[in-house]
Length: 618
Image 1 (cartoon, rainbow, N blue to C red):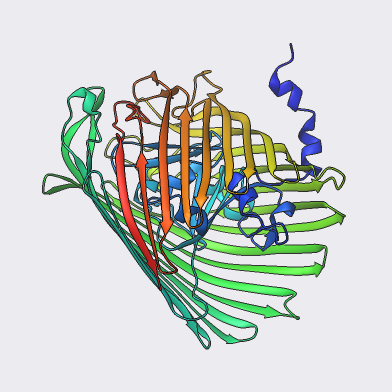
Image 2 (cartoon, rainbow, N blue to C red):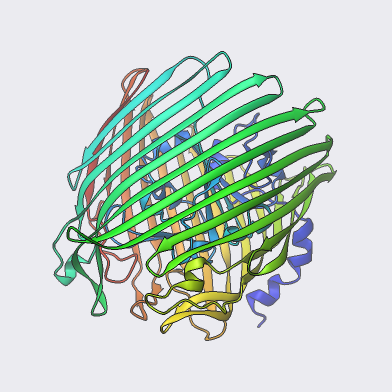
């Protein structure tokens, strides 16, 4: 019998020319029949989602509010192709594996600023510290995006876009209290006056938490967390075609955590204090009746992590990155566009045994054309000039095609990626694991799928096959970092949304992922083969919403213990009631059946928990 890989190989060439519409339940529900969803991240310009060539999911502010999300991972868990692992209580280290790729292959942007921590061993963003603070939308683009976003985007991009000020002044406040003595407060203010727009928001979380080390192993010390996050966006429209903007963000957190000892996680009197800041200053200039738009920007991020044993600091990790960038968008004709740009960035880390810097310059261009009606193609290329590893090129091809007769939409993309070893991987000396002879990672990925609306668009079904191959994957083996010859991840993403009645809807996702170390034949850690979600939304009366959901994960290999963790299913219930135009009350019960389960071997997860809150807008 022919293998799955053999069956799908003939569609690779077809996939380059075929179309894509996102494997996205949330997008299908959010899209208005008359006004199509527009996304930015997938092409770096505003593009209708039916013309986008990469798998893209959009999560709107309304969906985030209805989901009563406290942390960003609360809503990302419902995105197909994403598997999330948190090692314990609130704020604990959290990784996202996109389509079976490593966690550091997913790039996080907040308002266009790259947030990966340069001081991390394998620079990525720790999503355990990321709170929901005045988010307008989240765009998730799956598959290789190095051509547009550089080496950290080999697996995909998560772009968080915060709210901008417009119109009359508006403010909102919310307060929530619940299990584990958890208090969560939020406030925001936004508006515009003449040429000035502004949006400022803050969130504060304080919780007693639960034991990060599994309580079933005799660990009973609660691991609490505290988090303060502040966002500020300001813009000035100086003329009709020239504007400037600045975006500021600061996060301060302190968490208690448990560490590894004797082959499992155990109670420790450890805590980590983290300070994270980012700033962006940009200018936008439109020329030739807006046919050519120009964006000039400079950004800076810093991250400071200090770990403590009791009250004594025992380690520190400081990192920063500055970046200068230019992007131009030129509308050649109504059917043709080109995006081009250049950027230079310098990363720096200072920690025990390391004080190093490295610079990378990047140049990119993408051409998009609607060749014939309903067929949109794009082709892009990038050149990276790395201070240590020299020149490396990547490319990306996408396509979108819709059949008018059945509204069947085909979608596909093909791309390559390049990632240079991190400063930590190269120069770490405390543990002796740094390896200056490491080779850069290189990847190649593609996907092909079909989306089909049925029953007058009340049903939307989407199925996508994906495959990614990474050469020279960097991993810790024995006592240091080495290159694995090759790793491969392939699978299927499936999404379904059904409007059963005007006030009753069903949504579900399922992802099958097979991620392997091709050198050893072993399974890559924390990438379950089977994972899915199902939710039922019901509005029994005006202004009252109820949601029942379940997320399930199959058994998962954990390299820390070289064993498999069992699968699980966790049920949640949420409801809200809008009292009037100002006030809304809401509540939820998480893990209704008090399921004991693991996301990381011997690390605990939350039991049954209940929360209530009130939100007011003025």
